[in-house]
Each structure stands twice: as C-alpha cells, then as structure tokens.
Image 1 (tube, helix red, strand yellow):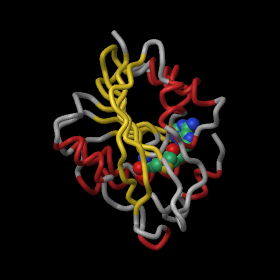
Image 2 (spheres, protein in one colour; image 1 turned 180 degrees about the vertical axis):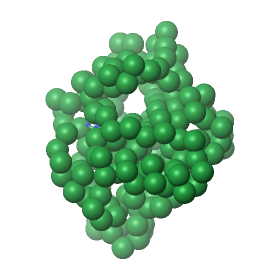
Image 3 (cartoon, rainbow, N blue to C red; image 1 turned 90 degrees about the vertical axis):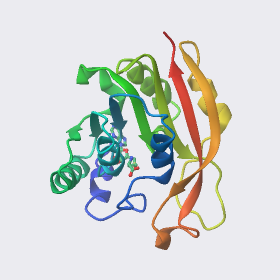
Image 4 (cartoon, protein in one colour; image 1 turned 180 degrees about the horizontal axis):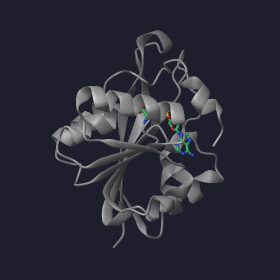
Length: 197
Ligand code: SAH
C-alpha cells in the first residue's frame, strides 16, 4: 500500500474521531457482532478497542505502522486486550488465523476496481465459513463533503458473489470531525455479507 496512508497519521485525519463509529456501536448493541473479530484497516483502533471491551477477542490490522503504533498506545492506556498488527489487507492469509467476524470501517472504499476482487479473496482466508463481514463505506456525495471515492450498492454486490451472500445493505452514517465535514458525518452504506459454508 502507499506510504501516504502512513503520512496522514502524522496528524489526525478526519475519520479519526477519537471514539468508535456509532454504526459499529449499534451493531454490537444489537448483538450483530459474533465472537472473535478482525478489524481490517483499523486505523488508530477505536472500533477494535470498543469491541474488545465488549468481550470480543479482537485483532486490528492496518498497513500504516504509525496508525498501529497509535492504536497500541491507546489500547495500553485503556487497559484493552485488543491486539494490533501491521499487515496488508490484500494479503490477509499471511495472518494465519481465522475469525468469526471481520469488520471494516472505511477500508473497502479505498480500493481500486482491480484491488476489490483481490481483497474479497483475501477476506475469504480469514473469515470462517458462515462468518460475517460487516462493512461501512461511503455512498453518495453531498455538497461540501470530503472524500474521493463513493461506492454504489451494485458495485458491492458485483464483487461479493459466488461464495458470498449479501444479507443486507442499508443506509448508514459515517461520523467524521465536524470541521472537515458539513454535518460531521457522511452518507454511507452498511453492508452485512456472509461467507458461504
Ligand atoms: N477503520 C479506521 C480507518 C479508516 S481509513 C477508522 O474507522 O478510523 C482507511 C484505513 O485503511 C487507513 O488507516 C489506511 O492506513 C488503511 N489501509 C489502506 N489500504 C490498506 C491495505 N492495503 N492494508 C491495510 N490497511 C490499509
């Protein structure tokens, strides 16, 4: 992955809001998150640390060493058992582990069209059969919103086929720092996708 991701973590990027994304908090409260969790593209670890505090065994991975350093420092400070590792989400087989759930808050939408199928293949190596991938990505662009890439429902469905079942794609909200975004949030999709058995 490009080192520009690591550069943005010299500062605090707009998505790094210092608390878990409300959509993932709601999913956890609704009992939608099962067992052990891989947080793919975890950034500075807020979602991973939150889920760990709710009795999930959690590994957060990110390609940015700086993000992982920050995540580990936060976990230490919070007394969290969440663990963090620098890894490429396009090559998750290297982790040599399988999880009940994979969460993705803002990773899928960074991939190019060419990378998407590679990511789905990578995901298949770390999600147990029958396990679910819970993903939030940008949807439509609103005036004054930041962020380059938007993803359509059809694009999500076209890449998760064959061994994958798209259970649901619903409108959601990506929280961001107020200053960078009109309403402090962006329109998003929350996709719930099951790996076939
Ligand atoms: N999930 C975090 C960060 C979202 S931003 C949050 O909600 O705050 C997208 C993240 O994906 C960045 O931290 C970036 O470093 C990471 N990333 C981008 N490409 C990656 C890749 N190929 N492998 C692992 N992480 C990647």
